[in-house]
Each structure stands twice: as C-alpha cells, then as structure tokens.
Image (tube, rainbow, N blue to C red; front, side, top):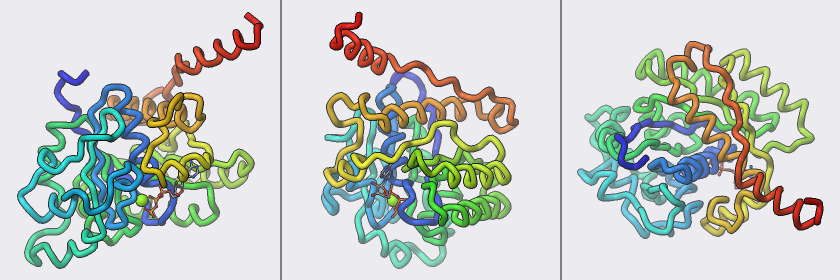
Length: 299
Ligand SMILES: Nc1ncnc2c1ncn2[C@@H]1O[C@H](COP(=O)(O)OP(=O)(O)OP(=O)(O)O)[C@@H](O)[C@H]1O
Ligand SMILES: [Mg+2]
C-alpha cells in the first residue's frame, strides 16, 4: 500500500467541549489505520499536548506544531517517527503553543496558517488527524476547521454532551458558510460508552439524527479503564501484547474501517446513498475464540 500515491485526507477532530475523547480518538484511529498499512500523521494543535503525551513523547523534547506554524520548518523535518505505533508519525506540541497568537504577524490571515504545512502533509500521508484544543475560538481550532475536508466529532454519552453537540453543529455550519464550504461531517463517534446508559445514548442519537442524519458512526467505543491507564504511560491500546483481546481495540479497528469506507466513497456518503459499513469478522478474534475452544477441549 505504501508505494501508492498518498490519499492526503485531512480530518479535524473537534468539539469545543473538553475531555470528551478528541485526543483518544485521534491517536487510536491513526494507530488503527497505521496497522492496516496506511501512513498517518497526527498534528497535536493543543498546548495541553494530550496527543503528544498519549504517544509517549516527552513534552519539550521536540520542536513541533509551534514551529510548523511560525517558521519555514515542514512536516517532513518536524515529524517524530521513532517509538510510535506502526504507521503513525506525530507533530508534537508543548505548552508554549499557547503563545502562538503573539508570535504570528498581526497582518496574516490566521485561518490560513495550516494551508502551507498541510499541502506537503497531503503529499506524504494517507490520513492527517488534527487534534484540536477544547476551544472553538482558539487560532489552531479555527485554522483546522478552515483547512480540512472532514470534521470528526467526538462525544461521550453524558448529559452535557447534548448541548455540546448542538454547539458543534452550529460551528460547522458557520465555517461552511463563511470560510470552508468543503468541510463535511465525517461522523460523530460515541465513545466511553457505558452499556447501561441506553436512554442517554438514545437521546444523543436523536440529536445527531435530527441535525445530521446518517452521520453517526455505527461503531461505538466502550468505556475501558485501560485507556486512561495506558495514556498515562504514553501508550495506545495497539502497543500492548495481544491487544485484540481488548474490546476497545477491536472497536477502534472497526471504527477505522468504517471511517475509511466513508472517505473512500465520499460522493455516495454525502448523497446519503452509501450502504452502511459491513463489519468484517476479525480474523484475530476468530483465532482467539478458536484457541479458547480448543483450550476447553471442546473441539
Ligand atoms: N473509551 C474510553 N473509556 C474510558 N476512558 C476514556 C475513553 N476514551 C477516553 N477516555 C478518557 O477520558 C479522558 C478524556 O479523553 P481525551 O483526553 O481524549 O479527551 P479530549 O476531548 O481530547 O480532552 P481535551 O478537550 O481536554 O483535550 C481521558 O482521561 C481519556 O483517557
Ligand atoms: Mg485533547
């Protein structure tokens, strides 16, 4: 797959609400696509540097998104490529990114600051994930929405998410009207889903269906305490032994396949005529099930 021309697809991962899975989704979707042979870049555009820490890259150890946006450096010279999940490169962040507004000229259009770096990134990578901070007004958020063709919304099934989703849909409508008519909602991911919160999930479903019919991802990500634990250790689910035994890892692989199905069939998807993604039976899971059966002496 790597000899092919890169797909060059840019996905802004957003929602101005904090702590609703933007970073976790960015790094896990990139890592899941990387496992399938896709070349992925995560650009950490948050001074809180969540993606950088989640990927185990010590803050301040690398020049990164600040330099990408304020100097002539490029994604080629700045990408961290070692000790990361397979197929995943990172443009790191650090707290100094919060000084971005004072470092860029007053006279340039701030909504365009990602255009130059992304034009090279599109030539090198299949998928570029922009992990944005929890503020719709932040310069990096606005620039991300202005330069992407896809917007991926993350939501936890929590009562506060209902208002957050509506605000996010309004922001997207604003961006489309005033700056980037190409921006389309790739999907809404429900994550950290507790199997018992069915009423809340149904309410969220209704909000998404009203505003954006057909855009919720079929695949949801379950609540998994291992995710924050691994994040604290700078690892994704895909960097632990036998990761396919963890439901959330299998779900992220399926979500990545669903995402790919949508972007590779953009016209049909946007027209509402794309058949839903058919989950493939995961061969590793089948093998694991077979092992269990034979261990129990039933085969
Ligand atoms: N499926 C899940 N199960 C359990 N915990 C999760 C899950 N997904 C994310 N989390 C945890 O929820 C917290 C918030 O997630 P994350 O940092 O991805 O959100 P965010 O939207 O990027 O936050 P911020 O807006 O602060 O950048 C983290 O501690 C993360 O490990
Ligand atoms: Mg984050």
